[in-house]
Image (cartoon, rainbow, N blue to C red; front, side, top):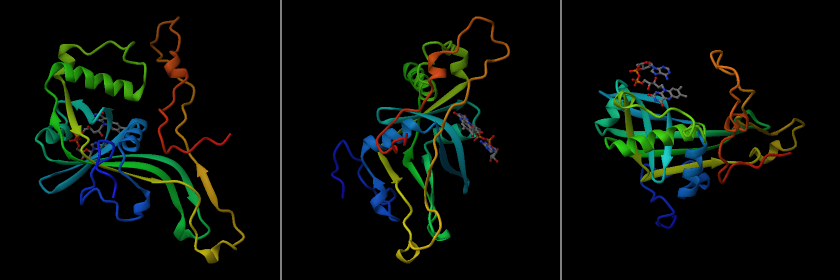
Length: 232
Ligand SMILES: Cc1cc2nc3c(=O)[nH]c(=O)nc-3n(C[C@H](O)[C@H](O)[C@H](O)COP(=O)(O)OP(=O)(O)OC[C@H]3O[C@@H](n4cnc5c(N)ncnc54)[C@H](O)[C@@H]3O)c2cc1C
């Protein structure tokens, strides 16, 4: 049982990892790092008995995950009512090729957060949250981008989901084959995968003389604990 300190999430019946519990992480550092590295998340909720799982951008500020979108979004309107939410974020680190078909797997880091979101109505918090969303996707962009007008803010809904009930699960390392299969004469191992930017494509309407910012040419996701080291 992890110590229930400010550094760890308290395990609850719905955040207790039952399958492969050794892969469970409840420390905030790991949960934060996965949320910060994942570009987007999936938000699950139920409307009239119908489950929906919606991909959407998120951003974390301290112990809050912010979601944003159009005021007309069904997802955001539903969440604003305070329904139960399940948010997941996943980073795929590699494919794991075992000797047996059965033991093939993936290396991953993922987070699951439960709770009820609240609508952000305070103007200053709205601006902070929007800044966090932009900076989450492209660190450095907020300083350059035109900031939202009052009219744009009115068309945007922002939701805050407190990080109070969360778990992480992390798989790393080689395949785990049955002992009798290690003798088989076939390749087995890991194929690491990484999100890698390609060359940026300037907007065809970009006036001449505007250089590609360094946060674009040097784009990379933040590196957190648990991320496998690159093999050079
Ligand atoms: C990577 C990524 C990031 C995104 N980020 C944001 C964000 O930050 N904010 C935001 O508001 N939206 C974002 N979207 C779009 C989001 O997934 C929803 O389409 C949008 O929020 C509208 O939600 P809604 O509940 O109003 O959908 P509705 O239009 O009410 O959904 C009606 C139906 O349309 C279909 N549908 C809706 N969305 C999708 C989808 N994404 N893929 C396939 N079918 C769909 C489903 O069948 C759904 O039941 C993102 C999508 C992706 C893939």
